[in-house]
Length: 468
Ligand SMILES: [Cu+2]
Image (cartoon, rainbow, N blue to C red; front, side, top):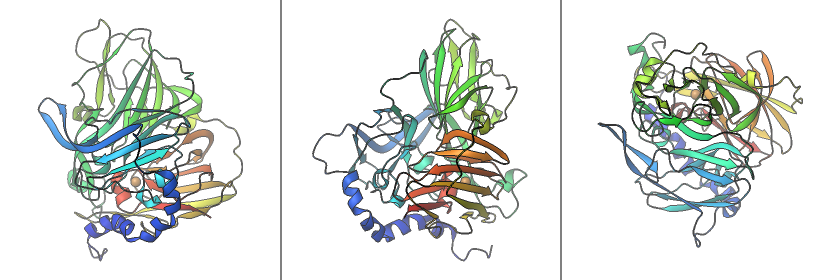
């Protein structure tokens, strides 16, 4: 336990300390901030009010959290591509917070990340954000604050919602649209080596959850998804969990994946199970052709027991919801891609992710190329118009959904398998794996790259890509 000269608590608040400390960065982005948000003199298009929330996940199961406009998830924002919107964020909590527009091309000062120079929404204050939403697809918004040790804050809370950027006309053919956001609740810090075999003795604390939900209810509570035989249902699924991967199935049915992270895939495939790492989305079509009452839920028994699922009920059907283990739970991004040859990148950038174990009862630290936030900066520097290949190596036994703000990237390789055409903003790296993605630097401004596990992000797994 000699390793870390600083107590873990100090390093966990470094991120915020750093941000508040570097006023200079804010000054540098000052001109752009003026463009991104304006004086509040007119009514906004939308208001999001951050406030404490008493959330009843099931009868007798009430938790205290934070949310937007009194609901979990927050209101669905359906925005037109390219049409400027103004959103007032009112913070009725006693802590400063910030909202990130995940998967959108938004200027850094309006992106909702303090690290990029976006303004925080002070406790008791209101801040107007304005931007022209693009590209079309299933996006989302969520708190981008530091949670650190506090398992009630940021992504551990109910501060998330769908943001759907609609094309001028919707070409999709479906009878019903269902939005489901998965989340895990009631986290506690645990030394995993105490409760199960696996993590080495020097591993630090991880978060374990007592409950889970789709939207605001645990499985078996709240309204079922009501369907009719012969319907085509579009499910927009979001994993809004702070740290947990989920794999979902709907017995007797298959999912035709048409978009990942809101972006149409070149090869839509029909699969038995859906894997979503934190922050990932999938748009899937399900043909309703097995009348009954079913569970759409996590394939792990303990996940459904915890509440991860929802009942799907056909019209005229009664009885207990049925669950059957799915035939196949493999997940491979490349099956949704094509074998087109991708252009050669102008530059290849290697990123190595490693863990500095925090030891029993301590907090881990995460490094990118040997450094933790904020020492990671700048992670790398880009030039407008150039194509970059990010070659990532996960040298750890944990999963990492790596998220790049303000850009869409193309997965070009998973392990040794080359692919093309799968466009994402978050890609999960399984334990001890390699992934490569390409993107064109076309949205100048400081840009975060980080792991979307709230704990890993707070423990240093983050860096800023900059533009020359
Ligand atoms: Cu991670």
